[in-house]
Amino acid sequence: MNQIARRLAGMGVGRGDKIAILAVNSIDYLETFMGGLRAGACVVPLSTMAAADALEKMLDDCDAKVLFLSEQYRGLVEPYEDRLGKLIAGGRIAYDFVRPGWRNFEEWLAPADDSAFSVPIGLLDDFNIIYSSGTTGLPKGILHSHIMRDMLAVRFTAFDYSPDTISLASTPLYSNTTLVSVLATVGVGGTTILMTKSDAPKFLEIAQRERVTHAMLVPVQYQRILAHPDFDTYDLGSFKAKLSTSAPLRAQIKADCLARWPGRLIEIYGLTEGAGSCTLEANLNPDKLHTVGKPGLGSEIVVLDEQGRVLPQGEVGELAGRAPLMMKGYYKQEDKTRELFWYDRDGRLFFKSGDMGKIDEDGFVVLLDRKKDMIISGGFNVYAADIEVLLLKHPEVVDVAVIGVPSEQWGESPMALAVRALGSKVTTEEIRAWANERLSKTQRLVAVEFRDQLPRSTIGKIMKRELRAPYWEGRASKI
Amino acid sequence: MGAEQPLVPQPTEADFPEFLSIPVRIARNAALFPDKAAVSCEGATRS
Image 1 (cartoon, chains in turn brown, orange):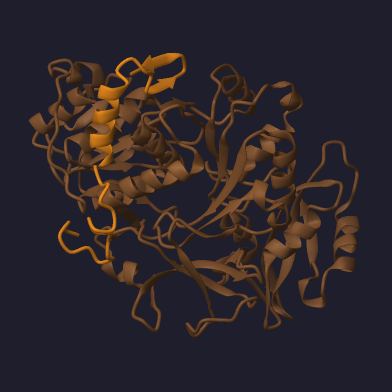
Image 2: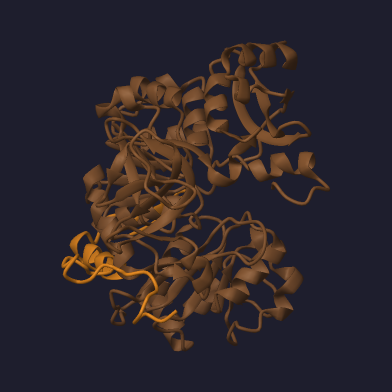
């Protein structure tokens, strides 16, 4: 880490300069990240799921002076590598491949000694930029400060992070989901075990063998790990806390987890941008598994109507939150940052989340849809999440996404894309009839189609935009 | 966006007097636990 910091400083990279990383999880990746911070740089971990043209925009937008790249993702850079004019001379570092114009990581590192190296770091200095997963236009770079990251890491001690922590990271390091847990671990002097990709049996083997205490997982990982046929044969008694984030964890998976997987189960709902977050201590609230918990970590949450007025408890609207932990802004996009803003009567700043939900009578937050995923049918708001919860109660449906498709009569109507249980012979019409008997008139499904699997991002979010696209092709709006 | 005037208000030292920064915490932990594995991946380990 000191060597990396020293080499970067030797190249003129210092406080506030940006370095980018596009690589598979590895020790070198994590050390580059931390070494960059030690040199005073702001680190930009780039999504390996992004398309080459989007990555070109990100690399230009973030003003990176140095790019660290692994072989696996060369193809995402080579189409435009001659146009990376903001990289400084010698600023192309290859972790594990040889190519003219690129310096080998080990050779680049070799001249530097490992004695302590540091530069002063201020509270408000830039820590990292994480690009949002938007698929159109210029991606938004979420800029976090050092104080925000340090404060968040310290607050994670509430989830039993300590020097004895052994944390298993099985999602990519470019994801905020991964980083919050990794930073909490390194911040307290625990041990981080990195997996290069998510793999249920490997996760279970490592967790048992290394006596893992913590893991931050996304819902689809819980689903796959718990479904592993040998799950119950593994000794997972070392777990102190398992955390879930990035998408709502279904109540039935939480219940299964509570019954079969030792340790606390904590669901965290929040934005990478920061502001309000909620935490659900599932073990302590078994009757609230359909919620994402209560505002936590110093957060406040309100529910807003279309006009930006605060709605009473129980009514559905857009969630907005505030907390001490908020991003500095979208990098170089002040207008986009301001689009998130909402102020209460006391002039306090909240971020609008784009998520629809409500607060129940006990103060727990129930999450419904992304605002943009809400289906408006005949003037009524229909929440796909409500229909998905019902469909998952069908014994032969193992995964499902509900989307809005065009309707001449209603504007749009809900449609289900379902994955059947292995060997199931149930038909689309049988599922549709079963669901429509139980749904309200406005929620009724216009159609059901089967899929072998649903497209998900690397952190497990169903890519609804991709699912909707064929049905809206040639139309001006809606997706 | 400069470090001096962020568009979104950030916590102050008064809000979080324990501020050290992650790199400083890592250096401190390395001194406290010199023999401990800090990170491992695919069988390789570094302290």
